Amino acid sequence: MNEPEPMGPYDTLKIWRESHIENHQTSISELNHFHDQVMQNLFDIALREVKEKLGPPPCQFSWFVMGSAGRFEQAIISDQDHGLVYQESNEKSREYFRELGKEISFGLYEIGYPYCDGDVMSSNPLWCKSNEEWEMQIDKWLEEESFESIRFLLIFYDARVLAGEEHGITRLKQQLHHHIEKRPYFLYRLFENTRHVKKAVGVFRQILTESHGSHAGYVDLKHSGFFPYINAIRLLAIKENINDTSTLSRLEKLCGFPEYKKLEGCTVDFEKLLNFRLQQHQASELYDDVHYLDVKKLDKKDRNEIKQILLNGKKLQDYTGTVIKRMLENEN
Image (cartoon, rainbow, N blue to C red; front, side, top):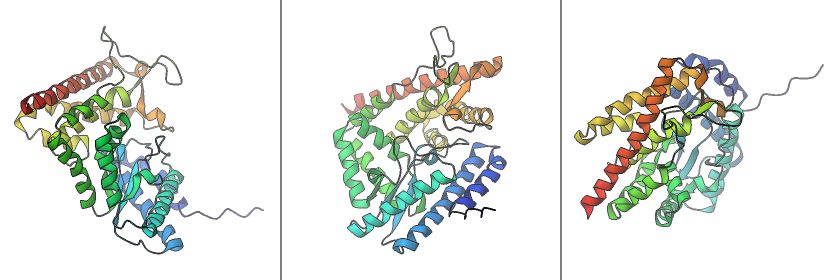
């Protein structure tokens, strides 16, 4: 009789996650609190593994999540987006935290969070740096103004600390605000980077679905639905120096400004979009499936509601562009 294989350091957490996640799907908030709890437990295990090999951390640090995790908008299945910043810039710290970054990425994969296709993970040296190196990196992205550099800046702006002190991340984000104060046109460069999204509704007000591939006949909710709202509200949050990372929290803060009162309808639309995805994909087993919606299975009411949300996302983008252009005109 074969002996059972010994349990790995992450197996218990994986089993616990798989057996409990069904109990946390009644709301997006509850689901994301559950993801946070799992990821924080994972981090503790990963740190313990590294401590056994390299001893305690050589300096203070922060582990932060980005993407949908940073915005508190994870679906049932979510990939990885995270990074590390540590205080001391020396070889000992670099070696330690790169090892920790690799362990975190491996552990998350082991318990059910797919690796990020774009390699936005602590295991990538680009996203694992000392505070001094991070300051230099952000300055470089700001000066380059390339499509990729701007994309990285926007990804970083959604960073939310799950372990360690938070002030360092807030301070790093202020580099972007200071840059815009000196060069207001840069906000429009950010807008240009995000304005082109997959068209969702045709000229005859029909929902445009994928024409080929495994999701033919489905609508891409991630690119056509979520991105217009996420990108537009993020830009307005940057303009108003709002440090909240979730789209709904940013909307709440923005609606406190008299000039943004009209955005209250966007809050309703985005909440519907989040809940629609949650209800439609509770049985999804693949990461990609979470982001696609089978229009054929919708009744007339839901189809019309989704269509209006997609149209409103485009209107929000146009509105954001107008706000930024008006700001630049007032600067001149």
